[in-house]
Image: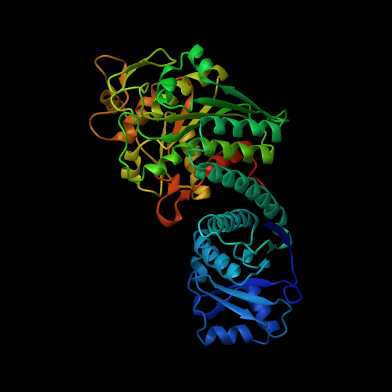
Length: 497
């Protein structure tokens, strides 16, 4: 699908469809008024007859409008004029894309951008529209298995907002490339996407973006030499051995010299091991690598935009299976840091993988470290499927992630990292146990990770409730690629216009 920016004479525009808006109480948007005047009040007459009431999500598709050169006009409801906000666009675009596709419309002029007329608004307006369009198109392809006829969307842009719109378009396309890549990788079945496959996808990034990306693959022999015995223990029961991919993205014209590390949990399948999961919905445990997929997608975005940053992405690939060589409840593991962990539950495996990675990345002297993981069912219990759990040991990093979440509507909710929770992971035979014993499972898991993240500013995103959807639309959401992308754009100072 191609997107374009142009200031159109709507009366003379030749296209398959022009999208215009109507507010409640029969009030037309400025573009709608132009076409209404050209058609001698034809649109006003239909609105006043009650054919569309202007409620958010309503629509009216018009053919052969008098004196208008466009083949069709799609009139969409925009709600109350003084209460319109970007959050309404998702519902508007969902219905709009479905209607356009049913009518086999290929070329569209989108004339609703006037609802955000100055440059800071138009940037986010374009970002939001394209994001919603691409998500709906991906859903139609993936879940409904239907062809997409729409291939050309032009935005009607006023000249004074053109630069902001261009920047938004560039950012939107790059973010969507990363988001789509993350979704496709996450949706693969586990007999295809195993730890080796995940590492090979990382290596392909160095081929595509060879000027900026280098990839180092750490196999189990190298992990043994590094002392990553917690990571290795998780993969012991599987024939698919663990691989860790270290993706280094560097630019010569660095704007911000901070070293940023993004770590993604990549359990390509998690049966729970000896502490096996219930069979119901176990097939969804192929999504336990969504953290790694999100880091992979975010690095694609960075490379597409040539962000002036130093970023290191780590894809922690592994598979947790029961077997004769699996690690067991009661085992005591020595981590790369030298700290020991008593295993109380082999289904609390992600933190064992991540604790070794958090130690490994100290060699890069990072300033900022963010790990992304489908870590705990407890986070789903606490926050449901709307907000990602956010933990951090640094107030500035916390605020920066909250800001990016608010900008993109990729919601997060801060949970506490209080000292009191640390006693819940005490062990009388090791430094820590791998699960708590008094509830607050998402917090005790984060508290466990925090013990290995003392030497840098660190944040943990628990995406167990937000990384995928169940049911008839089962599939990866790609979260939090948009959040991480915006976080990096903000650091790059690239949302200034």
